Length: 98
Image (tube, rainbow, N blue to C red; front, side, top):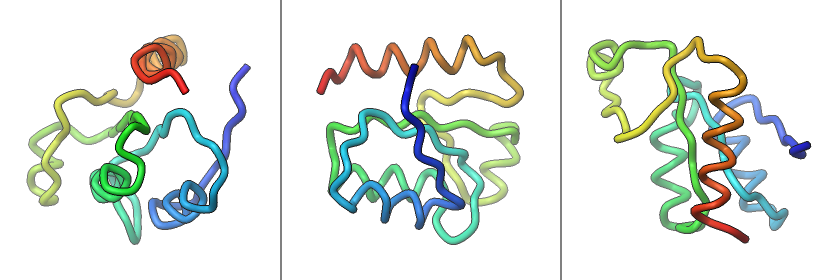
């Protein structure tokens, strides 16, 4: 029941969000070309501080650290069941109703 907008990478996602369309939550992979998920989250913290961001990764925390990416306090580790993603989206929407 959610409308989804896809982006090829973090830079495209940031441009879509800044385009003026309304977004209620962002679900992003951490490792992406051009602008990774952590960089996207940091950019959104400035321009859209109330927009919740859910980060996900297939890399273990140690592998992310080796890539120079500090893992967030909360992230989904791939693979995960669709129900877990839906639960997290719903939780974020309850915390930040728009």
